[in-house]
Amino acid sequence: MKKIAVFPGSFDPFTRGHESLVRRVLPLFDELIIAIGVNSNKSYFFTLEKRQRWIEQTFADEPKVRVETFSGLTIDYCRSKGSQFIVRGLRTTADLEFEKAIAQMNKAMADEIETLFILPTPELSAINSTIIRDIVRNGGDASKFVPAAINLYE
Image 1 (cartoon, helix red, strand yellow):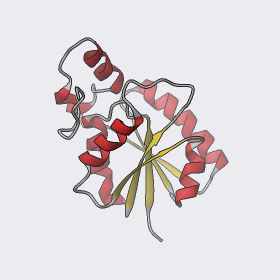
Image 2: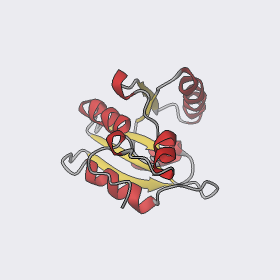
Image 3: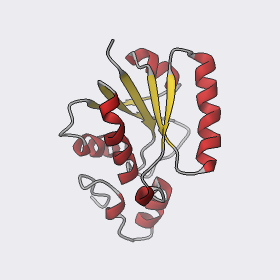
Image 4: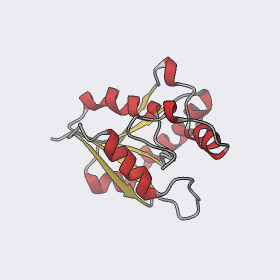
């Protein structure tokens, strides 16, 4: 059976921490779907099209990575793709508490799907999308916090 994982998120924007996580877990799976969640009640700083293109460009060299968008429950999306795994990153204890609750609810709804938590490498643990958006919004240079393929200022 093909091992398929889903790495869901808004990725507004996709960071070097996200990229590192994907590259580190990729050897564990036959396919990894980076799934950009769309929530009509949420406003995003970068367009969905930009976010998807940036991630596709970041992994243009990696045939095991697909980038897609979805709406609705992550667990339903995983089922529709035949995914047995959800991959999530944990930077802080607050992340752990939040992600643990979601993982436990997902497990209750879909016992066949496991959530795997991955810690960031120490040098990337402080990077997060909220801070990057704030830097960009205020005219700073956040380019060193995102993969080389991403131009936040286009």
